[in-house]
Image (cartoon, rainbow, N blue to C red; front, side, top):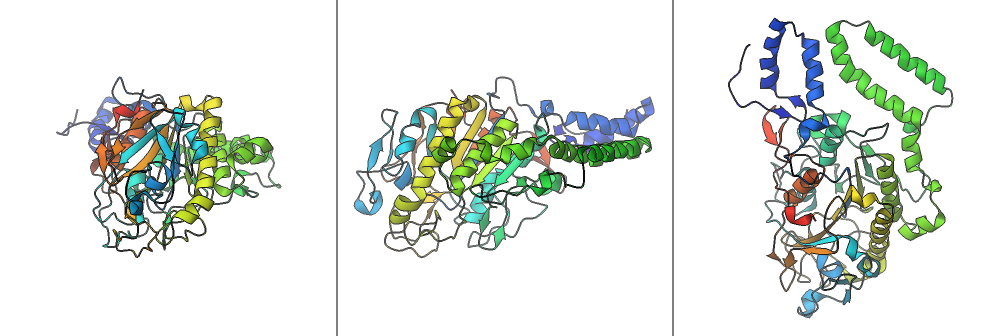
Length: 482
């Protein structure tokens, strides 16, 4: 057999190029190229992505609640009542259901479900051109720092060379068992200024693995034409079309058939199943929920998005990302976390009431339904806000009551999927400016998400240049798991 020197290995795309060339020698033993392609497809099964024995692997799905814009950790879930007034701000701490853990008075409902989650108070990284939103979001979504960052922290628009969003990798390696969407993003794209969708796509995996994007307001009527059969096409006619396609594929030559089974049957068949089964349409239909449940989540875009995320997970979706409904660089007086000009009024009167109601409802609802056993919920922004009021840390202009970007220390929440309940991981210093214990880098959080699903974060993938790279730069954090 022809042998190519070097370390053998599989990637999430199947066998490496070296392995395929080596396997080409099998043709001398009567194994054809179509059969090799079939073996490659089998190598890309979920089992090939599994990590070493003893990994948690308790999660089957993920909900990522992304609070884009950088919410103020010190004013929401890491209060510092003993700090000077220009640091502690206007809000007082309140007790939670867990002894020794306090949150801001802006989060009374979340305080009541703190016994179901882990509060990470030591998220931290030193920026390398990551002071502004786009580059920081890319790092949080992909697990890789971007190669080219402008002095402002901006990135160029999305590119096929980008590292894939973690949800794209997860959807590819752990596809749903039934006719369901693997990865859904809503209710709007990741965005800073005119850079839209950076870090939110499949990048070098290819567009076939992009998320299903529901860029609509779930608090209003949702249009799902692409998941609905056209009135003039009956289910019988759809079946006839699919059977015709299968007949055409069956008459192809072996090599063409092998390629078509991936390029046509795989995606056409999934789309056919999605439309015909109606399972995805039903998951998006919030009218099937009671008014009491919908009211509990909050009749706002954010709350109804979280409720829809729960329904999608129940229906079999692997990864759902709910982005905060307002973009970075938005108006804090409307709904943006980017509170350079005003911090306390918008947090108290607009943002935190929606966040508090929605998150507490999600944790409560999923726990009562048993969904937290095998669903990991992650709540984070791309960074926090400066502990000291009125200072400039990123080149932005801030008002006396505003806070600037702060990546050196901020807070995230994880729940379910085998993580600890009623637990605080890490701690910030007396001014919430840097970790005092157990610093946790964003890429380590991404690695932990993969790890919770039983996916080895150190497995090799091939980038756009077919160069081997680790799935993510980070290392899983064992201390988050029970």
